[in-house]
Image (tube, rainbow, N blue to C red; front, side, top):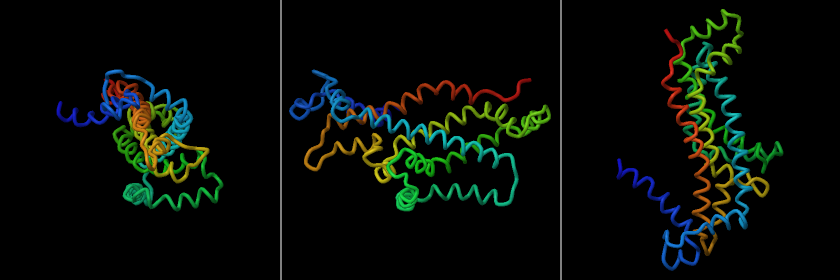
Length: 259
């Protein structure tokens, strides 16, 4: 396990070490903690405008989470609780969508966004990222809701709840760990997405994945800025997981019924 962790975390530690090395020492002595400085991080936010790129990424990722969870939870509830014609066919379609590479969807989405007049906007990237995140999220939430007894829904409706009331008051609280896990998946997917951001974004909307790529020039690579941008870009998803980790694990061990 120690060897696996070393192999996995090695590139990140090397990237952190490079980001803390000044530009003049980087090419003469190599990455080193001797004379460590945050100069690259200061330059990243002061000259490159990385803070604006972070805001764009947060808006896109948060919007994708809201849209993705809203559609995934309601669709999963329908698949889990209702029987209707074409149910298995529709679930299979969600699975088949994930088999197509993202590159095949870029051109149709680009034409669609241009016709709608929303190219180079947050809305365009939120919709595009949702097309990737929602299919797998529906499968995740459907599997989770199938583990919740239907008798709980029926008991809630017997006590006067409507179908939506049972979903809101009974099913969703029990699905909290699943919703958190699905939300993390959607957030990370939208945060790390590059092809949609490059194609459907532009001057007005430029997430960090595209901003980091611009640091690679034709004749020169700003290694200090590039590695510091990579460290900053990896922090939000890491911090998000650390915040919800205890709630996620504790929620998975809780039962729905006591007695």
